[in-house]
Length: 169
Image 1: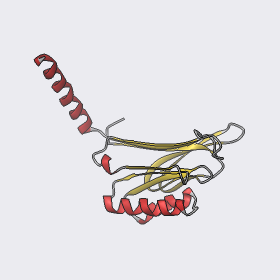
Image 2: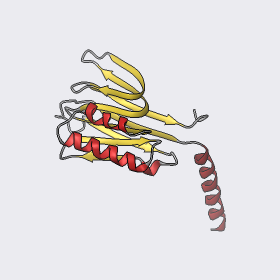
Image 3: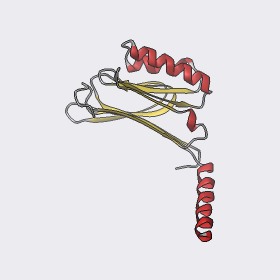
Image 4: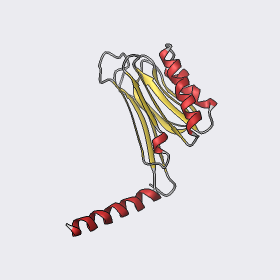
């Protein structure tokens, strides 16, 4: 028993050392059915191992058919204000582009959002790729850094934000 505890503590310490020296954050929205007819045709997700990972937010509204992911290096209160702005825009019929634009008013904040019929967008402080799949199967991948990146309503594709610490491949 004592040997198992020592082994567990050793693994735990090594894990903490490795995770303490590197961090990564991922936000992604994938649209395979922009019409909203397929209940699995729109998905969003977030994963973070950054030190501020508990400030990251994932909100899903089944009633209003949208999702909001937040992140960035900014402070918690401005992040919450940007999230509330984005929620209000989407609840009142706004597009993902309009809602993600709310992040630009708050330094260091990122808002990624979207929903069936609303498209998807990321705004604020980010490095992301927008993937658009045309009806003929052509795939276009465009990198963006900060500002606003949009997957228009009616299009299939994805927005992927991936950030890692320097030296972490």
